[in-house]
Length: 77
Image 1 (tube, one colour):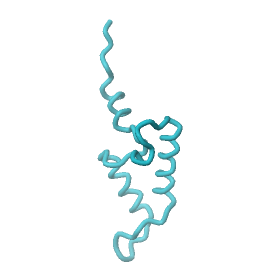
Image 2 (cartoon, rainbow, N blue to C red):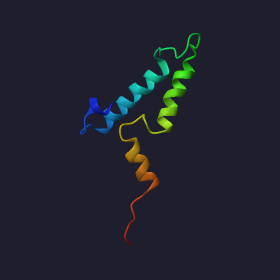
Image 3 (cartoon, one colour):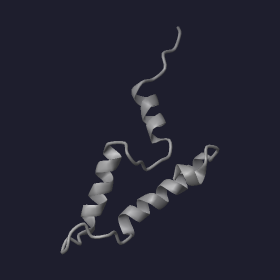
Image 4 (cartoon, helix red, strand yellow):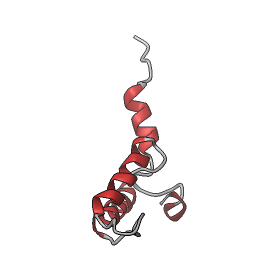
């Protein structure tokens, strides 16, 4: 996603790309991981596990956003 969007993408473009990935995970036919294992939840869960480990993300700036929330900058008072 980041390669396709580049570094100057607007928020609207990033959100649209995130929606496309989410729809792909939810709706596309994914390769079977073993013969007889065709349940789509397996592929969805695998993607979610990668997302939980921050190896893939739903938004190109997910890591930056999460860091801003978890480690806010100190404000001089």
